[in-house]
Image 1 (cartoon, rainbow, N blue to C red):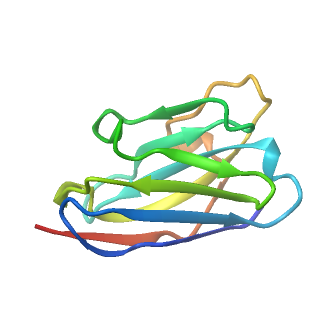
Image 2 (cartoon, rainbow, N blue to C red):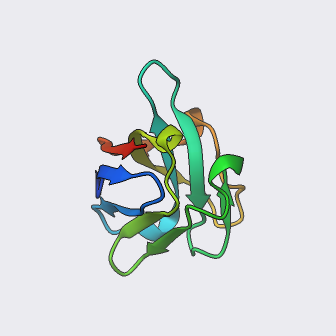
Length: 126
């Protein structure tokens, strides 16, 4: 599967952005999907993940309640709604796909994901 992330940009602290990730191929619903981010000089870190059906989600603690993840399998897309943005949220955001059975746990490490998008840059001004 090929992934294309978009929606990044410059936003003031407290503002919102919606990231999108478009997937190619017909097997999108067979993948758990995740969002990660990487700030300059730091390791890539987990942000959120959603199950194949969209029925389960998990979040990194610092974004819980602010960054809901969702997906639309009919459109082969996954979204990250980013609200109440903080300067420390600034990073390049990546979407990723994890080929998994429906009951598999949601992955939160980079090594568990099979495919990656190219990243979209989010800048938050204070």
